[in-house]
Length: 94
Image 1 (cartoon, one colour):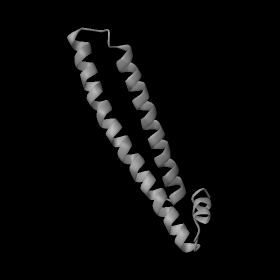
Image 2: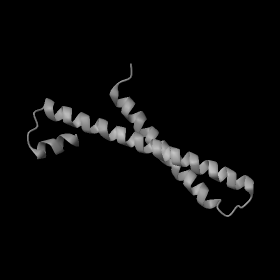
Image 3: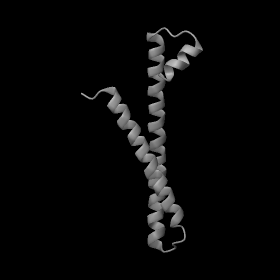
Image 4: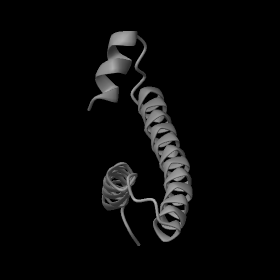
């Protein structure tokens, strides 16, 4: 069974990899806008659609990751009886 730390790390790596792919795809679209043949335009249109889907998926991954982090922080605040805002903030960054 996988422990939470490696899973979180692999999710962070997946998000980072997806960001990199999106950046490269956006750069490719920018650098090929001067090609006017139907073949290139069709390929660019397909890439633009895939890029849109990838951006939506990235947003979902990031939202889920943020929610997990917030839930973990709330649980730690309850477990350690953090009462003040300062205690809660410090716990969030540990």
